[in-house]
Amino acid sequence: MTALLILIYVAFISLGLPDSLLGSVWPAMHVDLGADLSLAGVLGAVVCAGTVLSGLFSARLIARFGTARVTAVSVLMTAAAMLGMALSRSFAFTLLLCVPLGLGGGAVDAALNNFVALHYRAQHMNWLHCFWGLGATLGPAVIGLLLRLTGQWRGGYLGMAAAQCVLAAVMFASLPLWRKVEGGTAGRDDDSGARPMRLREVLALPLAGPVLVSLLAYCGAESVMNLWCASYLVGARGISADTAASWVSLFFLGITLGRMLAGFLAARMRPAQLVRVGVLCSIAGIALLLMPLDGLLPVACLLVGLGFAPVYPSMLHRTPVIFGQQASQSVMGIQMAFAYIGSTLMPPLAGALTHLTGMGFLPLFVLGLVAVLLILSEHVNRRLCARDRQTAA
Image 1: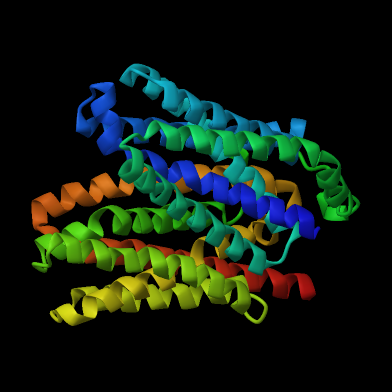
Image 2 (image 1 turned 90 degrees about the vertical axis):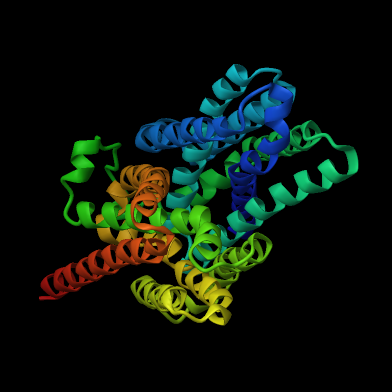
């Protein structure tokens, strides 16, 4: 179990690498490709579309081929896409490579999140997403170093593609270990008869609506903070661009450190409690963003990140509890799709609204999404408590 868990952690580092790499390398990449700087949004949209699509179909693939094989092939797909990007000489070919990049990333996300939710404690789910943050941090750092030393970005993609290939080989070699872990729980009564579910079947499950919308709201809020927080600090608060960038980094630091801390707290707190505490902490941070005291702004960014940290992992870990192990993989794939839809749609919506109302509206937009998350998560908690009382009676 420990050896496999380490392998899953490494896989999540590899999942974080391409998520942050494209945006970091694009200022240099678009010049080589002869593409307009604004076309980065098109590449990101294709990656997100692939991720949503693989999330929707992940349960069928995993039911047929197993978590390990789907993960290994998906990692290999991302490696092939990154290798192709390193060699690409045209925007059209790079755009085409974004399809396997998104498909591979979404399948890994759905497969590993459900596997950890089923077979490991909640603390490991928080640490798993902390390792994703480590990968997302390493990608830009490696590319930045290579650009400073060589002026070339292609070597970074080649090196990371090679690392992904090694990981895929290790995944294939570890298939017996995966079967051993899965076999240890295959005899559970509530795990028998599991089958892939269609989208309409998942949506018909009790509590599916509020759970999916709350995930969309959370991922939308996180993405809005990611994309627009620095612009808010500069445009609405008059902070210099370099200072704003350094303060926004505290938001990401808060998420990474918060998930590490949440892993330890998960031994004493239930996932529902972690979500509640995290949401309230993020609301406190958003309130500080709205206060007319510039000295509180870095604290606000850190607080919002710390508050966001345990929400997503804790919500995902509750999936088998809320929906049962038979439905968990199907629900997890749909959850990944809704999460990426939120990440894709909310930032441009926030941009459009701030264009109409002013950049000062941004914290209120994030607060609205967090309020939706809090209301729906508390609704789910009440329904689960009522279900438990009914079962006990």
